[in-house]
Image 1 (tube, helix red, strand yellow):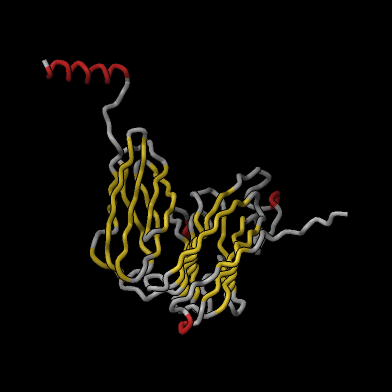
Image 2 (image 1 turned 90 degrees about the vertical axis):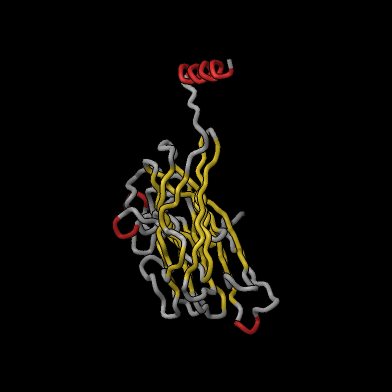
Length: 273
């Protein structure tokens, strides 16, 4: 009797269009466990439900919303010295599936990492970091004399898809002082200040872009700090000044906390008469 009822229930589900499926299966195919000497690696894998278009990747506590295309995903991430843990989660109406991998990275320590994170978009959002000596690290000047490096973490367009997905700035031995963090919604012109009508978007109305900036200081040490800021870019040519983060000299780091100075968005204030 039990077998008959089970069979009837299964046939009823098929007739009604209800699929007896569970949560999607997520599989990280690369990297495997072990160790690497690379600073940046591509996390690649698959999701069993081909209808899923977005997944969440968490790399050492920093999360990214990533694109899933035909059940496949790929996302570059920045590694930390020592053990690294990568988690990928995907959800459908039947639940959430996940996979994780832990491996060791033989890279130098990093005093400062600044992430710019936003959902994958078909347009350009750029991270600008101005170092204490005035050097600006951005898409046209990707390495500074002091060791600052801009990494593009989006990976499926010619040239790395500069500005079309998450970016990261790293400084291995960060000079003491204040680092200015800005985010630009590029609209043409060598400095991102071109008019929308003459830029790469034509005259199309572009969407607002929520973004998150996460600054990680002294990662992997007892002095590690994380500062997070969220905001929205409303139109091309917007430049949002997130703030300044102060890196202390090495002999002042123990037992002290850094600061993240918020600065309002740059614009001309209206004069009220």
